[in-house]
Length: 145
Ligand code: HEC
Ligand code: HEC
Ligand code: HEC
Image (cartoon, rainbow, N blue to C red; front, side, top):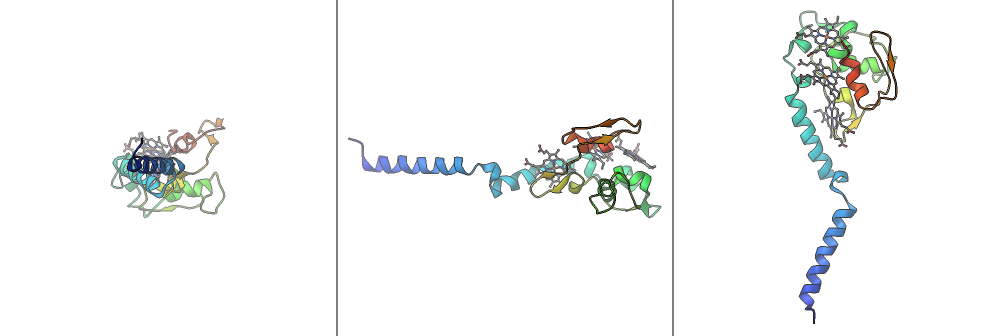
């Protein structure tokens, strides 16, 4: 005969397992927070976050980053280029303020949840246009020289 306490324990274990499967950790708030913490840690180790680097400080003496350079050397300039600041896309309309890096908002519309910007088409300096790109479409806007 199977003992009652055993059945109760087995039932509890099953219930916990079902709950786990019904709410995968990737969709839970804890899962999102863990991914954000990891993304933040990795970003901080990268050149994209190196605010003291020449690539972000070069224009400090000028007071702002000119339109010809701001797309790749400033978060504000990149978002201006994409039109994400409400201005026309495909062009940097105004010089960018100093002090940004290649930060979360260069690549994400929502960096809390890790939602990426869509940028599926990139024109290179040669005039060649590449379409149907995934996340790499973001990288290729800057890493093309
Ligand atoms: C807004 C422009 C911009 C975008 C978008 C961008 N990068 Fe960069 N990236 C830079 C700049 C500027 C540097 C130089 C940073 C430095 O030297 O401090 C750099 C540096 C790097 C380096 C050199 C290693 C390092 O840590 O410095 C790698 C690798 C790299 N980027 C990969 C990527 C990838 C992959 C993506 C897309 C997911 C991407 N980049 C998107 C501007 C950009
Ligand atoms: C299409 C994107 C893009 C544009 C536009 C751009 N750059 Fe860059 N620049 C980069 C990237 C990416 C790097 C980092 C290269 C690397 O680390 O290998 C860089 C590096 C640099 C560096 C650092 C070089 C070093 O040896 O440390 C300077 C200075 C610089 N750029 C100046 C400028 C100036 C001035 C302009 C405007 C006239 C400009 N860039 C326009 C993408 C761009
Ligand atoms: C140069 C571009 C770039 C920058 C800067 C960047 N990310 Fe990301 N991030 C990515 C890409 C690409 C992915 C992978 C997305 C995918 O696979 O769908 C990602 C993934 C993530 C994810 C996980 C999303 C998921 O569903 O798995 C989070 C959260 C995140 N990033 C947050 C951040 C935060 C916070 C920062 C700033 C501290 C940051 N990212 C900076 C490009 C970037």
